[in-house]
Image (tube, rainbow, N blue to C red):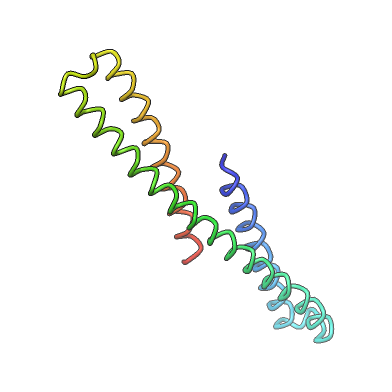
Length: 129
């Protein structure tokens, strides 16, 4: 698992949990199951934690966007490499075995890069919901 993915998932889970805790606290106050003083004390702590987690998630999103940009560049390079392989193969510069082996290697890299880019985009979509 990519390091960004693990960090993102952990941050998202903790943010969701903290939001649920804050909602539970709000519900407890509404039902008069906690005092205003207790609510304010716990609410202050939870609100501070929410702000901290949201800032962390924004930081992760910035890093993920940077990584997505890198991956898009890599995809372009892989596509250029494939085109170059095709040209050399059609031009008779490489034999079938070398062409096939090199093409498989480039296609594997291209597919892996596209998969990671898709994961990043899907994860970033979850943040913006």
